[in-house]
Image (cartoon, rainbow, N blue to C red):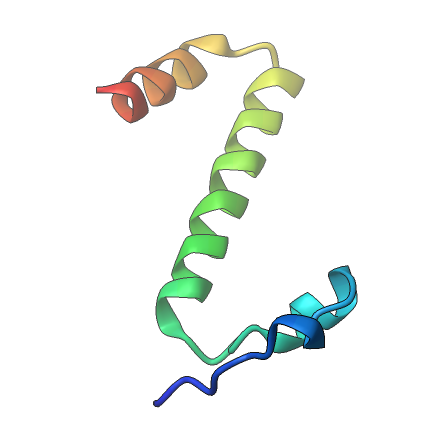
Length: 63
């Protein structure tokens, strides 16, 4: 899909910026899902005091 050019003065705040994003892009949904999964995994590992999976996940991301 061809992107429409956005005028510089058409974005006046956060809400207009979010409205200007093409939310039909597949890569955007994949990226958001990945970050949501990482957040849930990290919060669950902290909640249940199991830091070993979190340390392993951090090691995989940093290499």
